[in-house]
Length: 614
Ligand SMILES: [Zn+2]
Image 1 (cartoon, rainbow, N blue to C red):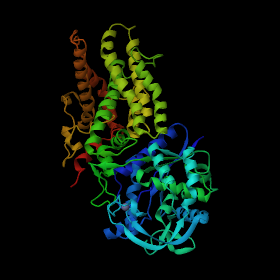
Image 2 (cartoon, rainbow, N blue to C red):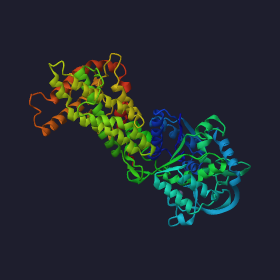
Image 3 (spheres, helix red, strand yellow):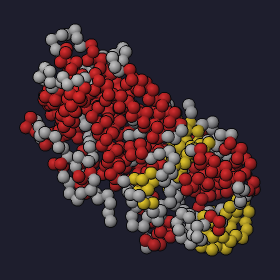
Image 4 (cartoon, rainbow, N blue to C red):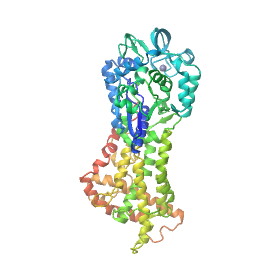
């Protein structure tokens, strides 16, 4: 069984997490889920970089003890696991994890042949935790932080990076160390070609405020935070020889680092050189993502004024699926992307509610309406006109796999989305409601509609499976809708995803306005159940009504004959649907209905969270 070890970078905890952190975590989680689904053994690791000098400075600025400050922010990062439905197997905190410090010390000693102590003078940006050669500054300021770096003169330990230009170049050009996208690989090769200089790997303990890991045998120095942090990828596995280490790092499997473009050099040059020095295997792949801005502005690294677009708050307000979907569907493989709540809502409504939610809802509602909820036998071949849909279903998994091998999350989601588009096109073309009319009074005429419904439900099941790595919670609801219960019938049609913008609360309001969630015809008088049941069902009815009206409009455009027999889809579908489903609703509301719908999450907190505090 292939073993794949996937890591995220471990962020500084000088502030609370922002949407940019969520991007990398979600990308890593998708890779992990997809590979697990394919039968691989996967270990997904994340964590926090506690030992940064920036944490010390931020704690001082906040008037808090470093330990308390670091713990509080690290907890917020750890909590993202739940908020974003991440399947993190191990979360390492570099200041607290008992595996880390001995691992760093061991790694340091393993590199001893390349470590030496010397006096160094240079311009140091605390924000970057990095010395800058004057040529890389912009008007004398850090290109990243736009602050004037400190002139520092001190004794430091250095790592003999200059020895490793050739082995690094060979590893990268041979593909043994794969760097994606290609532009980043070229950037690294150009950096190596320009000449590698030895780099500082320690600093005086005094300048570090006593925070960090002392250099073994030289307690006046602490290990440079980057050396310390990079080691997390192996310290969590135990010493070389430990079972976890042999399995995940020394074995023949994949070792994949995800990281942002700002730390490319550390991961694609310094870290591999450190591994070469210590005699350990290199990562097999490094995937570099670009940055997110929020509302057109760079996301502040200092965290001053509160982190913009906090992922946990976004997930609480709009649901985990909507947040994940935006990150995966809109952020390009190359190039920065701008996050706004409006874009998140528009994407979720357009695709998850209208595209996918409507599809699943219509299909399940039609199977209830026309077949009493019993799934027609799977068709032997695709229904007439169903070949394109069949192909989309058949090809999705391989297309997703190929896209994820390229770390192309947009291409991967597009491959799944093709099924939704083809299925919706198939419904419009096959017109199941006309087939249902045609088969009335013809007991032998059921085969065509059976084939159409069977294929559509099959497509929904494929979507439930293929969407699982991307929007796991939503995919679970889709699968639940497609699975017959003990009585052989599908569960009642219920929304798998609610429109977020149906209420102004979805964008920015102070008070919950649940009454504005739905804007269709009021069908409450037909429903004997309580308000909750009505609320849940109304979305279904509204969707069916809107869809039916839409279909009528299309029919009229297509051939102008839709009213020929005086019975329209719009007239019959919702009423039949409501009738079919009433019994189920009563039952469901008393049992697991509330548990399956994130109703409280979606309806209630929306009104209380203002996404753009100013
Ligand atoms: Zn800087």
